[in-house]
Image (cartoon, rainbow, N blue to C red; front, top):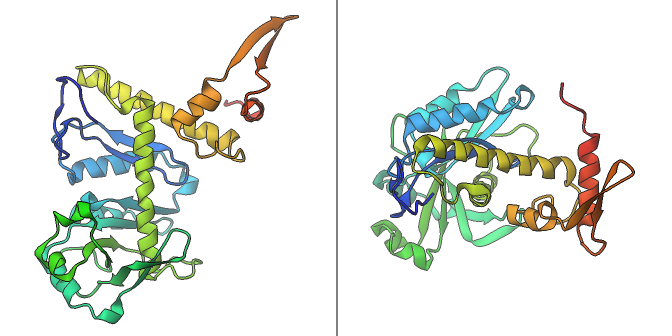
Length: 318
């Protein structure tokens, strides 16, 4: 999050901007914001203590009835010994915790990739399950020589033709082979009841679906996190919490009342503001009753009425 002025904790970030470097976790099923930690701009990406804190707070938000099977997806900053060992330690007789995390490629990894036979590479899958020609994935487990990682951990490698943005950061090995490589670490061997869940193609597609987190970042910024308002750290922490509460209220409204309304079930905050939150209407009083008069020509008047009725039908909290 960038800062337009000098604020407590603001510093130069890894993106060469000036501001803050928060760490956050969202629920992919519901899009809710589970936890967010405000950090200084120069905070490290792979600080284990911060990852563990956010993970602990995020898991605490999940109801016990939904904690039997959990999948944790993290980008490359999550590939640390302590975090992966902690995730392995969360497994119990009643809870299964699986993970898919990015992996920082080293020389040893490139040496392992070089030993892969041509037949090891297969076409990757799109999110709809169709083949994605020109993009390949292979199993790298067993060829990795790095020590100290959880027993049974698998490594999957993906290769793509480098784009113009990637070419300036290619390693000597990637320049020589003409491919851009990325590695995923996972403890998923096979998911019971899901055919093909052990295949590298399926796991690669599941890991790439983590990209939806960028949508959650954008939504949180639209809710007020684009720029923190105060010079004081405590005030900004409170602002961050309020913005995430607004983010969750927006998610709950869509989940509870708009799940069958086309164009609104996964709408962005700005879309929700335009179509429902800033509804052109007039509140009238007549015969000791209030009437909300909505413009007949407003395309989403019916969706608003359905949402309002469903909200009023919800059982009251004790």
